[in-house]
Image (cartoon, rainbow, N blue to C red):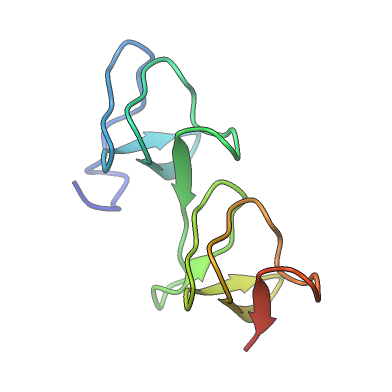
Length: 101
């Protein structure tokens, strides 16, 4: 399945999802990070990461999404590069995992 919400199935509490499965929930596309059932997308530390991109394909920072070294994101109109693995750490903290590009 792709990132197109018209292709991704709507999340269902009864369905078992595996790593790499995409669903559509509350207007967004979500990617399963591990096996899950009956865990709604939206918990920034849960099994789902919200997949949002700009029109050119650049990732938009979301709390639930996993980023690794070198990943580029847009947050509050600025572009950042991840210095190391991060999840649920907003760009902008000078001691955090993000460097302004």
